[in-house]
Amino acid sequence: MKYISTRDDRTERGFSEILLEGLAPDGGLYLPVAYPKVDAATLERWRALSYADLAFEILSLYIDDIPAADLKRLVSSTYTEAVFGTPQIVPIRALEPGVWLEALSNGPTLAFKDMAMQLLGALFEYELARRGQTLNILGATSGDTGSAAEYAMRGKRGVNVFMLSPHGRMSPFQQAQMFSLQDANIHNIAVEGVFDDCQDIVKAVSADLEFKRNYRIGTVNSINWARMLAQVVYYFAGYFQATAHNAQKVSFAVPSGNFGNICAGHVARMMGLPIERLVLATNENDVLDEFFRTGTYRVRRSAETFETSSPSMDISKASNFERFVFDLLGRDGARTAELFGPALARDGGFSITAEERARIGSFGFVSGRSTHADRLATIRDAWARFGTLIDTHTADGLKVAREHLQPGVPMLVLETALPAKFAATIHEALGREPERPAALRDIESLPKRFTVMPVDASRVKDYIVQHVTA
Ligand SMILES: *Cc1c(COP(=O)(O)O)cnc(C)c1O
Image 1 (spheres, helix red, strand yellow):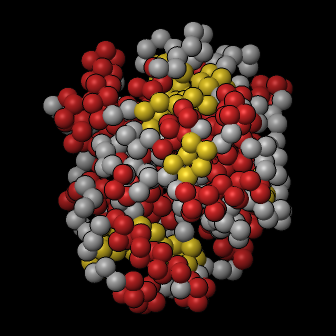
Image 2 (spheres, helix red, strand yellow; image 1 turned 90 degrees about the horizontal axis):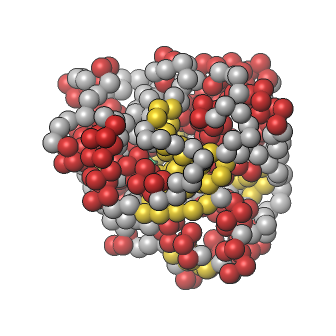
């Protein structure tokens, strides 16, 4: 399998070439030259596989430059009961008739980003060893992504992580999750500023191309193709659990921010997984809901980006969205380049034509939005009627899922985080604290390892220079 950019550059690259990359050189995102199609017999055979074996089968369709035995070993050591808590890895549980929750958040950091990041850690370590290289991952986080990256990369040979976070602004739980890591290759830098300051420092350091090259600076952001690919697997795994045979269709409801998770659902559907609808749920930051309702994509300014109680969906633009638009436009790279390049820069957005809009339905997408009041009501309702405690992001998904139910089509709502991560809103909804997994009960009392720094990119560079292992 080869990969191309969503923009003008038609260069075909192998998986290992793009594994450690973010954007393509022309500013586009990588996609396979074509989606492999899964026929009925293959689907039937996959039904019986364990999660790790299923992941191996799916990844093998996209990765042909890692020997099969190596890939199998990497996948099998990633998707284990020890790491994800259950033998099914992504168990589904019934809510109301026809509605299921698919648990994606039983990994080490209690959010679905572990599903992909854990595999990425294994793939990075493997590929870096193969090349005899090292990589220094520099990132900024306000919570979920940073901790998922650190838990995936801890103790991995050839990789250091330098993670910036706003000093004193994460929840005590999130802080403890990250700062209690004692691994020598994990560096927590608490910046005396807000999240945007952290992100600006990452940009400033990465813009120094000489520094970036000399110190082998890389990222693990959500546009990485390998992350997307890892997420395709749980759409298949959810489908097999909710159906008895392949004539059945299901729909998925996905709490969305950067369009990474649901884009993996789009890929699964393009491969032939019988998905009826992909239900996209946003919170008050409704860039994507607006697009699917109106055909206009309008990036928000920071003053228009709200801080909500489903914070991992608080985005002003959706960094993976270009992948879907490329497919929607019949893979017209020149037009995609115009829309996401000059049009976005000039107008802060774009509109697709009525004819293009009419095609959205054939990709299965529908959408809706959810507010803080909706979240509280949905959390209360799920607790009162089913005794099921859900987190705020999953509540957004469930709220919008209910607006798109169809008779005879099971709806799988992706559970993207555990309620323990968002205790304050659970308390607001129910007047009680969510339970924590036993292993994390006293996490706040563990010794912490972090360095406080002013908002100063040169100080961060100095720190990196002093701490990279040769
Ligand atoms: C990141 C995240 C999301 C949004 O996922 P995207 O792939 O950015 O659409 C939703 N819920 C939780 C808990 C997350 O951490």
